[in-house]
Structures are given as C-alpha cells and as structure tokens.
Length: 351
Image (cartoon, rainbow, N blue to C red; front, side):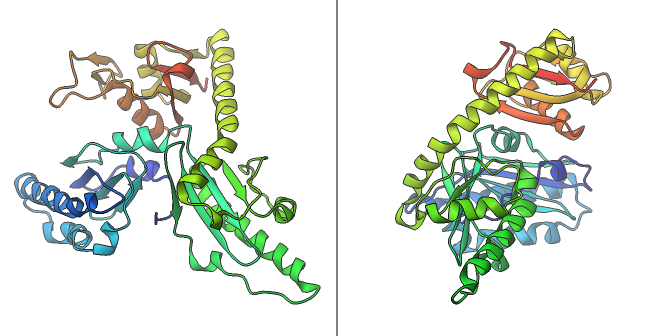
C-alpha cells in the first residue's frame, strides 16, 4: 500500500545540506520477481557507502545510512512495492517514494538531490486520485492510465461510528464532510490531482453537497469498489478520467496558443532556458519520452548541447523542468501527439 501521495518535488529541489543520497531502482509487485528487490537495494547502498567515504569522509555516514539499512531488512516494505522506488536522504530529509512506472537503477551522492526521474512521473498529466466512501469508511487510491494503488490514509480519516434512526443521514453527512476536508488538505491540494468519487449512487449527491474540493471530477463511479479487483477499478477510473485528461490538455494547448499569439510563449529551447533561469515561465509543457542531450549553464542560462546522453551528459528537457519547478512554475509532461510544438517544450511566460 502506498504512503500518502503528496508531491515532494518542491522540497527536494530546495537547497540541502550535503551529502545528498539519491537511490532509484525498478521494483516488482509480485513474488518471485520481488525477491531480488532488497538484494539490489543492498548493492546500491554499498555503492553509496563507498562514494560517501570517498567524497564526504567527515560526514556522519553511519547516521545517514541507518534509515536506509533499516529499509533493506524490512520484509513488509519489500512485499508491498509498486513499479519503481526512489529514496532520497540527507541529514535533514528522508523521502521514500513509490512510483507507478519503472525507473532506471541509480545511486548518486552529490550536493543536491537527483530529482529528474521523479519529475517525469510525478508531473505527468494522466495521474489522478480515486476516493471510495461508504457511510462508515473511506479509502483513497492514486493512479494513472496504467496502474492504480491504494494510499494508506491516516487512521482518523477512516472510521465513522454508525448512527441510529433519524441520526444516520446527519452522521453520514458529517463523516463525508470530514473525509472531504482531510483528503483535500492532505492529498488533493498538495498534488493538484483530479479526484474521482466512487460510492453508491445514493451517496453521490450527498457527498457532493458537502464537498468543497475544487478538484472533484463531475462524473463519478456509482458502485461499491470492494466488488472490483484493482485492475478493474483502474480501467473504470480511467474511463472517467480520460475526458478530464483530454480536456485539460486541450485547455493547456489553447492557453499556449493564445499566449504565443501575444508573444508571451515560446518553443525555442534557448529562449525557454533563459526564461526558466529568470523565473519567467508560468507553465512548461514537456514532451513525454523525449530526451535532448545537453544542459543549461547555471551562470548564464545558455543552452549547451551534447552529442548523446552517454556518460554524465544531462537531458536538457529535465534541466528545464527542474529550473521551472525551482522558480515555482508548473511543469506538465504531455504525450507527443498532444504537444503544440516539435521542439520538446512549450513554455507560457508569466510576463
């Protein structure tokens, strides 16, 4: 079961006290494939340990590695994995993030966290939440078109005492209001993800009448999801989400077109890089699965192209996305067939 599905990117791209450890690895949902996951994680830890002793010999290496070593031996943790894992740790930060798409195996020790693999996943436009509620219970799921997983809600959100007689509807309405507030504050607002309501038809109108969540999708799933397996629920949720997803992409593309007509947008990589470094970009659309070898000069904002992504060469699009997020802009990963440009980016400026 996933942990709370907040978006930690703004925290992770903020300045950190080095050394910063970034571990990524693909993981597996089922046995026997998942039996090798803790072994691979242990190998990454040993790689990190060697790097720490070489680059930061004066750091409290034992303290840095202790929580990661605890994860390595936690069998329950490894028995509940998704498709990928990111672990980012420093003296003041520990983020353990389950992701619903595979990631490339990496172990990096640096002065800042390596967040680029997360950007491609956490900023994808196809992600959503599903909230299932009954009169006495609430469950939350996070997913995309390919995967869906349950989030471990805080205990106080889960349970509701049964009412009696005429008090049942009043108690149910109060419970729905509490669930709505807590889901909005802890999950919807931090992530910005659309929320699909799944509940019996008789409860749809009642929940919506008390909800103040602006991300609640208009069309909900009117049934008891306990009767569905996870893949069936994912497929049904995507049927409800796809029109929302397509409408959002169309709105973004239209906004970009309008801004470009007013000279407040660009798809030119050099111009976008300069604007990103200056904090001028409000929204950056990045083409999914597109990579452009290169980087941005941190002092001048100039684009430095490279021949390939081999070795230590960065992906220019990831650098752009990270720069925009650092300046509090919005980054959205968009499929190639919906991109309004052929350069891999489409930026709308704030001014």
